[in-house]
Every structure is written in C-alpha cells, then in structure tokens.
Amino acid sequence: MKPKIAITIGDFNGIGPEVVLRSIITPSVRKNIQPILIGSFELFQHYAKLFKINISLTQVENLKAKVTTNDIPVINVHNATTKNLLIGKNAPDAGVCAGQAIERAISLCMDKSVDAMVTAPISKEALHFAGYNFPGQTEMLAMLTRSERVAMMLISKTMRVALATVHIPLKNVSENLFTDRIVEKLSTVQSSLKNDFGISDPSIAVLGVNPHAGENGAIGMEEKDVIAPAIKKAQEKNIKAAGPFSADGFFASGMYKKYDAILAMYHDQGLIPLKMSGFDEGVNFSAGLKIIRTSPDHGTAFNIAGKGIANPGSMISAIQLASSIAQRRGK
Image 1 (spheres, rainbow, N blue to C red):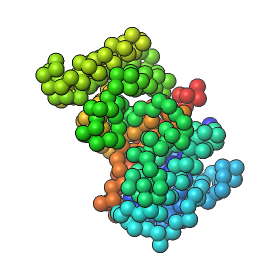
Image 2 (image 1 turned 180 degrees about the horizontal axis):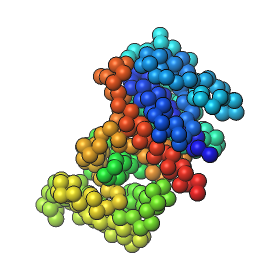
Image 3 (image 1 turned 45 degrees about the vertical axis):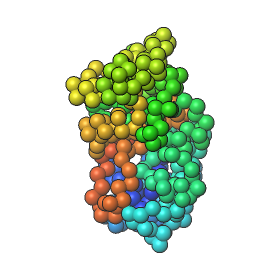
Image 4 (image 1 turned 135 degrees about the vertical axis):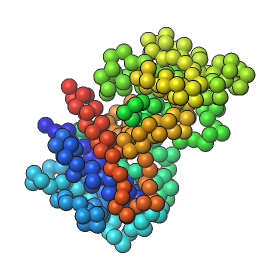
C-alpha cells in the first residue's frame, strides 16, 4: 500500500498551491504515494488551470469517499474563491484557509486516516491576522498534537541541522539557552535519527553560540556555563554528542560531514549553511512530533507568486521524506 500523505494548501496568495500541484504530478511522487490535498478546492482548480497543470481533482468530504484511480482527492476546508485572492500579499482569508488546512491534516494524522502530512509554506503574518497566534507551524503542530518534545530539523542531501531555539529574536537567544533544554533537544534528535532515519548509533555535533565558541570565556560564557555542561550530561545518557564547535570553522572546514546531525543554537546559524548547500531540495522535519510532518525549507515567495516559475524541488523532497519515514515507522 502506498503511504497516504495529507498535503496542505499553504498560503494561497503565495507559491504553495503551485508547488503542491507541480509536485504531485511528478512521476516519482505519484508512483510512491497517495496524496490527499487539503485547502480550497476551487483555488486548487484555479491554479491548475492557470499554470496548465494536467491533473484531475475531485472534491471529497472525507477519505471514505470513492475516488477513481487517476483522480486526486481534495478535502475542502475553506470556500475561498478567486475573489479572495490577493496574489503576493498577506491577507486574513489566506491565513484562515492555511490554518484550517493544518488543523484538518493533523486530525487525519492523529486518527490514522493518513500516514503523514506535508505543509506548504504559510505566512506567519497572515496566520496571525486569522487568529492563529503561533511563532510558526512547528510550534502550532506541537501544541495541537500535544507533543512535549519537538525539535525543528532541516535536512538537505549534505546535512541535518536541528535548532536549540527557533523563531525568536536574536537578542533573546542567549537567555533561552538552558542546559536541560539542550540535553532535551539532543535526546529528541538522537531518537529521531534512530527511528526515522535508521541510523543505529548517531553522532551529533553541537555548535557554540559566540564567535570562536567563546574562546574559553573571552568572548562569552554560554559555552562554558551552559553548552559544554549540556554535552557532558547528554554523553552520560549515551548520546554521542560533541562540541561546542565554532560555527564558522565547523562548516567551512567540512567537519559537518563527520556527523549525522548538527544542533545549532539559533535559526540562521544553522540554516544559512544548510540552505546554501541545497536551497531547492531542503526539507523541514518536526522531530519528536507524535505524527509525521515535513515541509519545504522555503517560504511563501510572494515576489514570484502567480508567475508559474516556482521550483517544486523542496516540496518534492518533503513529500518523499514524509513517505520514507512513514514506511520506516510502519515496519
């Protein structure tokens, strides 16, 4: 049986619907998964016609409905039409549709109707307009699935990068770094590497937060007071963690190739090198979540929305990763 993957529309004023539709007609995707689209049926139809994507969509109320072999089921959660479109702009209607699609996909995953979910890019601002007051999708998914330990992990062909802190201002990073939190993130990442990626004895590199990893306290004390003790505690729990490493030298020297994953202390520290290594193929994976969820590693790309030039590579990778993890967990 092919894994059933729920795929949300994302922000319909961005490139979400386009990369979703282009992805699911890709032979490697259609051959290996059974996609279920969630969002606005009319807007999925609109974008398919706009971009001349040869696909047959069928609106369904639930997954018990009969669908012919070549049709893609679409669960309509919001009656948005072309009149609601504001291409390239933030709008409450798009936030409502995106949020409701995420909620339905979570529900389908939680009751085992589907094997995994993939979320198309959303606008945090539009979600906030719609009343979804979360810093990002990862935090929303963690709360709605009641998952206590979740680590945001970005994955490319060359590296896996997890984050100790996620969507917070840079000035607040240091005060949000705690020894126990770092140990918890390392434990979550280790479990995911074993269970979701099939790595029996994973190794994890831990980055420092200051330039030169603090230079033994000369450029900051976080490494000595927080990060190094966390690594020691993790090692005592049989987690193969090493560091703290100076981020610039770690990536520039190719040391990342020696480790199965990297724990970065803040968002851009880890994601800039990862995205430079493969922007059109990166995947965001929520390690430790009670369900399987992936997404592309890019945003709504409002600047190219509606132009038919969006690259679906990252969305294809996200769908493929969700499928492979679902199959591994199923075994």
